[in-house]
Length: 222
Length: 222
DNA sequence: GCAATAGTGTCTCTAAGACAGTATTTC
DNA sequence: GAAATACTGTCTTAGAGACACTATTGC
Image 1 (cartoon, rainbow over the protein chains, first blue to last red):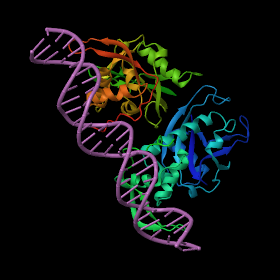
Image 2 (cartoon, chains in turn brown, yellow, purple, cyan):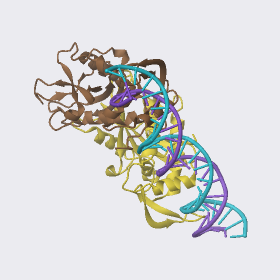
Image 3 (cartoon, rainbow over the protein chains, first blue to last red):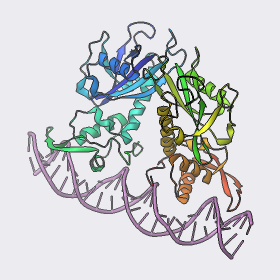
Image 4 (spheres, rainbow over the protein chains, first blue to last red):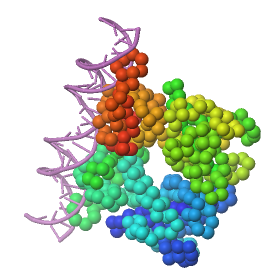
C-alpha cells in the first residue's frame, strides 16, 4: 500500500509538477512522483502529507490534499504487486525552494515535458495526466486556482493561473467581472499592488465561497 | 486490500442500492455494500466486477464500473487495518432479480433509508453517500442516466431517472428539447412505445456522445 | 504626451426556464 | 367527446463572449 502525490505549481508561466529522479532500477534515470509506503495505522491522507513534507518543506497544515484515484494494475511495479493511492496537491510558487530535507532531491519539471514519452517511471504518466486533468476540471467550478497563489493576489495573477493550466488565453475583462461579481468568491482587501507600469491592481484574498456557479468554462476558446 | 461496490438502480420511483445483511460481528444485522478481498494478481476493477457478478447475475461485460475513491482510515474495520477501493455501478432495474449465485442474499434498499443513522456497517454510509453524490453530479454532464434504463427507452423514462436521482421534478418540455437537441446524445429508433393512454413516445437508444454540453443543471428548481 | 496594465460598459447571442399550445393516443 | 401523455413554440431572462471604452500608473 503506497501513496503518490501529484504536486502542481506554476513556475515561469508553465504548469510544473514535483518529481524525483530515480537512482536505481527499475526505471533508473526516469522521474517519479513523490511517494512512499503507508505506515501501519497511518491514515492515507497523512501518508500523502508526510511524503509531501519530506520532499518539499511545506508546512503540513497549509496544504489541501485531494484524493485522485487508486492505481493497482498487476505489473505496474515490476518488483511486486503494489496498489497506490494518488493525491493531488497545489502549491504557490515560492513556497517550495528546490529540495527538501529528504535524501532524494525533488525538483520541478513542466508537466508537458513530463507527459512526453519515456520520461516518467511506472504508471506515473497516467497518474500525472489524471492529476493535471483534475486540476483543469476543478478550475471551472472551484477556487482551486487560488491555491497556486500567495494569500493575496491580483485578478491578473489569478487569470494567469487559468491561462497556464488551461493553456489558452482568457478575455481579461470578462474574467475580471466573472470572478469579482461571483458572490464571496474573492474578497477585496482594499489595498493595491503596483507592479511596474500600468494601473496598480487591487489585491484580493480567497472568499468564503469555494465553488463558482455558474462555472467558468474552458470550452470557449479551446 | 478490498473492494466495495455501490450498485445503484431505480426501483418503484426510488433510488436504491444493492446491500447484503451482515450475519456476524462486527456490525451484525446491519447492511453492507457488496465487496470483498482483491485476489493476488487481480486488477482492482476486475475484483469489483467479480464481486458485483457474485451478488447479482449481471453479465460482466455489460456493466460500467467507475472508481469512486479509496477509504483507508485506521479503524474503519475494527478487526484489522483494511484499505478499500470503492466503485460505482449503475444497473437497469429488471436486470437484477433478487439474489445472485452467492451465499449471502443481496437485496435492494432505498438509498435514502440506508443513509439514515445506524443502517450501514463500517464506513459504508460515507461510501454510499459519495456514490450517490457522484451519480447525481454525473447526471449533469454525462449520459450515465441511460445506464439506469434498458437499451431502448423513452425520453419520459430518461427524465424519470433524473427526477428520482435528483429528487425533484423537471420540466418535461424543456428536458425533452435539451436531450434530443444535444447532438448525438440520444438517437431515435423510429419506433414508438405505447404505454397505456396518451400519445406513444418515441424510443431512443444511447447516442455516440457521452457528454452533455452545456450540462443539465440540478440547481434550477432545487 | 505615450505605453502599459486595470477595470467597466455595452452589444450580441446562446440557452435555460416558464408555460402555452399542438399531436396522438385510450377510454 | 375528455383525459392523458408526448412533444413543440415562444417569450423572458441570465450570462458568456467580443470588444470598445475609461482609469491610473510609469516613462
